[in-house]
Length: 245
Image (cartoon, rainbow, N blue to C red):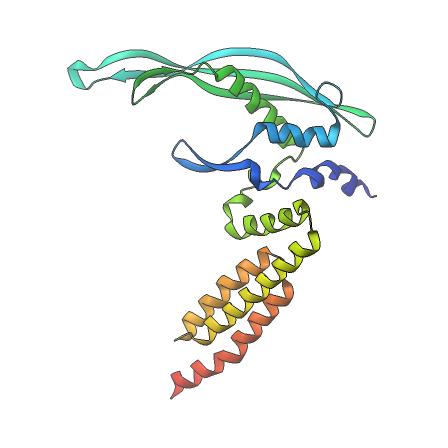
C-alpha cells in the first residue's frame, strides 16, 4: 500500500454515512443534515474498538461564554433581559490505529441561555450536547461522515445511490436485492428514453438528457449514460430539420 492510500485508510472506511442515522434539521435558518452521535460512536467502535480501549476523550476545558444582549419590547418599553450564554467544552480526543496512538483537540458549543418566542430559555442538556458536538467534530477530522460535511447529502441523487448501496449491504438476500435494483435501473432507463422521444423541442430534449445524466452519474452508471447520450444524438437531427424547414 502506498503512503497516500495508507494515509486515507481510516477515511476511506468511514466517509460514507448510513442514511438510517441522518435527518434533516434547521439551524440558524439553514437546512442541514443532522448526524446521530450514537451512530458515529458505533462506527468508531467498529473501526477502533470499544470506547476507553480503542478510542476516547478527556474534557480539558469547560466554560460559559457571554453572547449578544437580549431585549424585550420596543422603543421606550425596550428592556434588557441580560446576555445570551453559550456552553463550550474542549476535549482531547484520542484513538489507536496501526499500533499507534493519535490525539487531537476539538471544541463543542451549545446555546444555554437564549431568547426564544417563549421568552428567555435555558437548556439543561447543553453540557451533554456540547460534548456530543465535540466528539462528532473530532471524528469528522478522521473522515467519519465526510460525505455529510462535504455537502454531498444535499445532492438527492447521491443520497439515493447511497441508499441503494446500503440496501444491498444490509439485505438478507443480497442477490435478490441486486436483481430488484437492476429491474428498477432498466425501468428508469426505459422511462427516460420514452420521455425523450416525446420531447417537443430540442431545448426540452437536452433538458431531459441532462437531468437523467446527472442522476445516472451519481449512480456511476456509465453504460446508461452512453445509452441516453445515444438517444440524444439520434433525436437531435429531427428538431434541426424541423427548424430548418
